[in-house]
Image 1 (tube, rainbow, N blue to C red):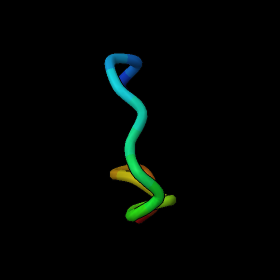
Image 2: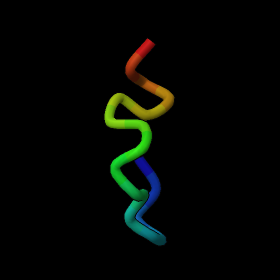
Image 3: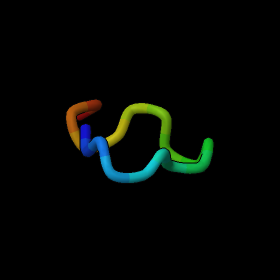
Length: 18
């Protein structure tokens, strides 16, 4: 996860979710 900005609740899993 990138600590720059918080994502909106569109993709909970993120890139590692796969």
